[in-house]
Image (cartoon, rainbow, N blue to C red; front, top):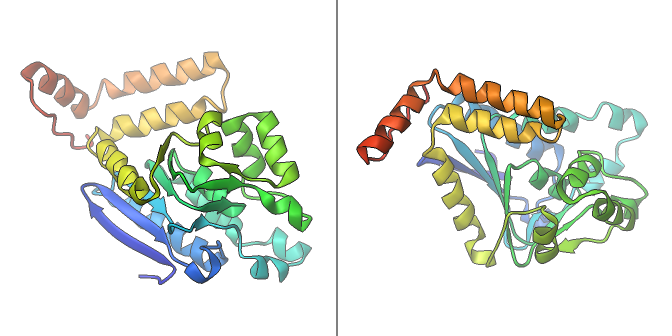
Length: 257
C-alpha cells in the first residue's frame, strides 16, 4: 500500500481512498496521482467494489498541485506531463465517486473533487482555483467543470481573482450537495456510498452516465439517451428482482446481472 494514499475496503461495497501527504497539505504530485489512478484501476476491476469515497485530512482535502514539481517542468515538460494520463483515468472511472472534503480544496484539489459524482463538504471546506496568482491557469478541468457546476459568472470570478469560496457559498452555487460538521463528513460520504452500493449496479451505471450526459448533450439527445438506457435495463435480471421484491414487500438482492 502506498504511503501517500491510504486504502480501506472494500467493505459493504465501498472503498475509501485517503490522500496522505500531510507535510504538503495533500498536494497532488505525479506519484500520488499515479497511485490514485492505479487504485481506481483495481476498484473498477473488482465486482465487490460498487462505489468509492475519496477524502483527505481535516486540514486539507488537497491544497493544489505540487508547486516544486510543477516549477521543474518547462513547456515541453508540461506538454508531456504524465499527470494528464492520470487525470484522464480518473475521469473514465465507471463507478460512483463521492468526495468528502474538509479544509482546503484548491487548484488541483478542487479539480479532483469536481471529478466526483457527489461532493460532501465540512463547514471548514474552502474551494478555489488560485492558479492565476502564480501566473498560470487551471489545467486539469478547473475552467470547464467549474462552469458546469456553478455557472460562468462565479467560475469566472473564482478563476480570475484566485479567491476561494466557503462551503456555504459552494452549496448555494451547486458545487457540493451537502454540508456537514467536519468530523462527520467522511462518515456521511461513506453512508451515501453504501446506499448506492446496495442498488442494482447496471442501473447505477446507466443512471450515472445519463445524468452526466446532461452536460454534453442538448435536451432532445439527452432524452433519447435516457430512454435507450431505460429500455436496456428492461432486459436485466436486477430489474425483475426489483419489481418482484417491491411486490413481495422484501428487500431486493441485486447481483449486477
